[in-house]
Image 1 (cartoon, rainbow, N blue to C red):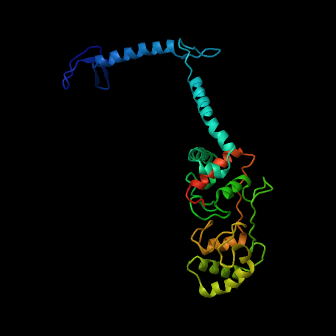
Image 2 (image 1 turned 120 degrees about the vertical axis):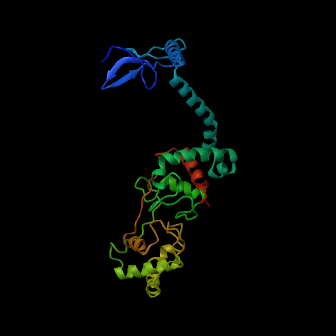
Length: 290
């Protein structure tokens, strides 16, 4: 490095005398205002260390002159929020679903709390917006396997669907017509064509006519002679455009062959009755509740 300073020919600025590989360093000090702001920040930080908790010690940390604690502040806020909610939670504990629905204040509180509980417990299957997915019902539409009334939704949440956790779970086991060789592949194909015809889908008319008789003998007991389903049994309506596992012939054949049989857990015992009430009111409010 060169020790001699000089004036740079291009910028007209004095150099520091430092040079690396032919590149000379210009003597461009920081602006005065920046220096003063930097010093002010140092002074401010010293004051902060004195006033607020700052430095770790072997047994804890320095408390500061004011003894301020963000954790204590947050805890106080949580306790205040719980106290404010206690009255509403007590009211929900002592109210029926119909009474909650009839009270604008209780309903508003239940929907807000139910939305939070739904995100924590139900969204992994039904989605954040409750739109569901293949094998997981959309809770925003008007198609309810077990009924969309407040009471029906509440019971479904309480006991689940085909759940081993509750003796009162809702059970609707569709026979595995293919896996258990109840019907042949040709018969299942014909039934699938008939089911497609019920919902107005493209189908083979001759195969659908053959499938109609097979449907009457094997499927009508649950789905009804008209295919409109039965909420008492959890049998879906086959005449609409809403399909839990898809409306293609391949998906319908798969459902007939295997019976599908998804499982929803029973939330009784896992969530409080208070929370389950809120969930029922929230789900009912999504737009598909009857």
